[in-house]
Length: 257
Figure 1 (cartoon, rainbow, N blue to C red):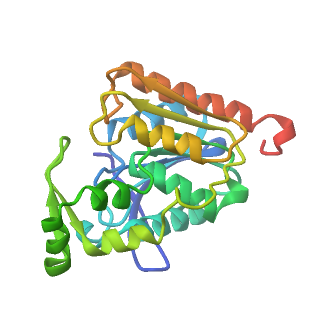
Figure 2 (cartoon, helix red, strand yellow):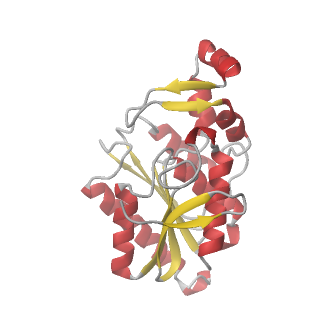
């Protein structure tokens, strides 16, 4: 684990991060639920950015990794606030969010909060609105009753220990849904999705593609790739997608050089 630096947000949350100075736009890695900035994709992209002299930021949301806070007390809005505050404090100029799983939802929330600064976006197995369309929609009547009485439900995961889903996570998620209202993404977007992903289905990727208004949005489906999307070929696809969007963002007519 690399030694982190810390930024304290106006809300008092102490966020761990690693910053690489370089040429803009800033590539910002946004991790998934219960993931941290030491994951394979984050470290691989950081090394790739350093080789190119590309500005890069990875960080842990509150309740994740080396940052302060308890995961079970957090919610989508908290992590969106973390993302906004650390990006606002540590970077200047155009940004290119790279969102993995829940980080894809966070990237879409950034597109609302920091629209003028978004140069483009890459999403990997993006999971927008998963608290409502994944968790709540799949709950049995017994689980919904348990949520009301105990305020939490434990769900098994194919990738780690069980998830604890709290009532606050569900209720706060409803305040940050992005697939119910118009979703304008006026910049290049590249989406990557594995067909063997058991956490986020291809239906979600296709729904996002259909729902968003975007002049240049492409979805790449990778046969037999799982939710981690972190083997050699998949990492190569992530690199190519980020490089593609960076090249487009730097074109003079976009005014983001």
